[in-house]
Image (cartoon, rainbow, N blue to C red; front, side, top):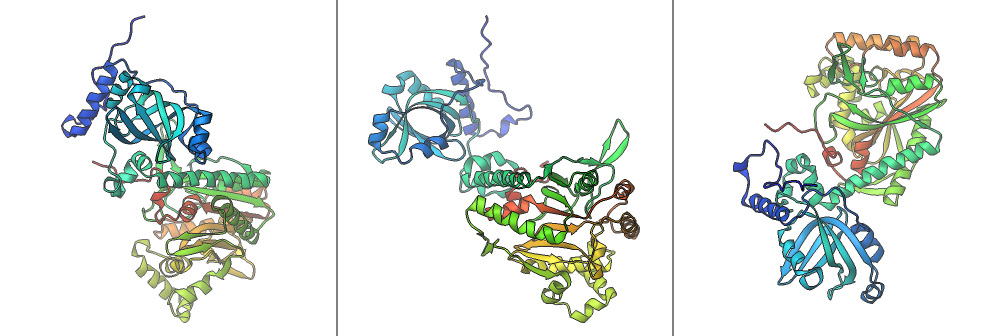
Length: 509
């Protein structure tokens, strides 16, 4: 069989601008070509490590020099080279698996003169498989004495210098792979996120909930008061919306006989970007028949407290300058009481809807025109929520901004609903779900009237959902919890971009 031709240049993106390459880029490319010319497979199909860096550190961190010498532990471990220093015919370097680092000791008389010489063609950032035995150096550092190695991948660009190159926040988000390589603490944020989602699944699975999937492209963007993204299906020649929430589909399933359902879902809302908002985000939504929003509050305390204990080992955690406690019971405050206490608005002014609407439009002129309830919501966002640091259930907000919730018992102007506020952020939102189809149709009609007046963040009319209610939705409690914001809390991160691997950014020209 004829051997494949040896490439003379490493493959580069077709759009790569040769004139913008640094001297270091050119040196790395030349080293790559020399490796290929020496017969090294530039793009191996696989590798066969017997250990991971993290596994070695965990298993042998406490082993003494004498124990390692006696055991002669053989390892084959892969990683990225993150430090390198050469001293004559010996070289020390560190490899990382993204979580831990392990030192490697390479000597000409052990690995062989040819292998030692070839290693000069390796750079920081390259991937390597090292074979050898564990020992401790004179400085007692756990180390692999390298008896042989395999080339796994070439890093064709120099890694950024940690304290300068990666202080560029946009670089960190645009090239998240560099952020993960250089900043182990960033990797830990996303390990925490993964563990959080897994723990949420266990919680609901153990309680008899069924995990389901609902459409991400919908003919009607329902389930939340938000502007949707619009797309077009060519074969059907119809416009569709990326979902703003899965709520109406999940409640259809409760109508259909699934009494406990949940979904960890991606939602899309055509809104601004700030520390708490990304247009694409992740939510947990769950619904349980025969329950109401009071039951949802108790369940939320249990869920969040349990997650905190499992992931952080305690019931409190630092967030910015505060220590947040998730020890139940959480504080409960009525929406209007919170406004009266924190907003600075004179109590008698709340009895004048026109004055409240005018004040709300002054605070958020881009939201005009407003209803009384929407104006109250804006005043809450501007003046109240930042005061709510410890977990607080804000209960019974205005019904006219809660078109999918039952009216509160004893006050038809309020909704049987709560929002959970922590560190000034809305973490959860829950209802006693509206089950009366005639009332739901009336609420949709009221929302449509507000849309005709110019409010583009109203709920559309969904007649199929109304018809589903006509088949009987039993008393149901439902809730949505923001996964991204929950990770922000547990990881002590002040912006949502720190907990989303690839946040939305303005495209570069």
